[in-house]
Image (cartoon, rainbow, N blue to C red):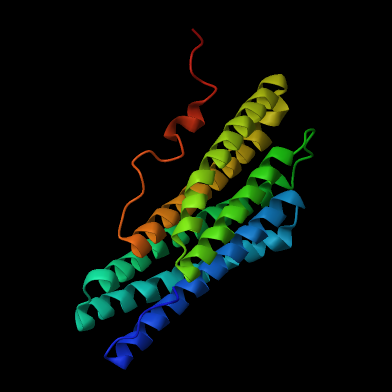
Length: 239
């Protein structure tokens, strides 16, 4: 995060700037991972899938490095007030970024399996969902770097659109499976891909909440713009 006030101990400011740089690096890697995973689905690009999977090792290693750095910072500097809030928030964000990386790698792995099938239907819904998730992820990573609470709130609100699209994709895939049993295997993989994309959106929303808190010292409203029951939208019994 930028715009950090100068501290009396210059080395402390240097350490905080290093933490911000590490978070930015991790965010950039994860953003690239998701982009590779999206290309793997949209263009049946096995090379992009492999790169998304490979990048996961870098994300995991950086998460461990940041965790160790934060523990050291807490022990040696004993931060208070805004500094403490910001350091703890950074630790929370690394956890969400790591999970986003995991989901991107999972999407990429399933896209490789899907390349074995000739799909008799369009993947436009999945492609649209991937695009929305990428846009939200880019926005929240920018908000982290700029300490932008308003942009974080915008990402938080837009998660509902991702959930609504997930519901639509879920219904479509169930319909394809019911129409032709040969669609069951590829549609099952696509269901997992759609769920992974939805979860990437959830973690982007988590980061938005953390950024908002780090910047303002306040929590977002209790009513989150999403519904955890989205996955069950089409299996509820009709009245």
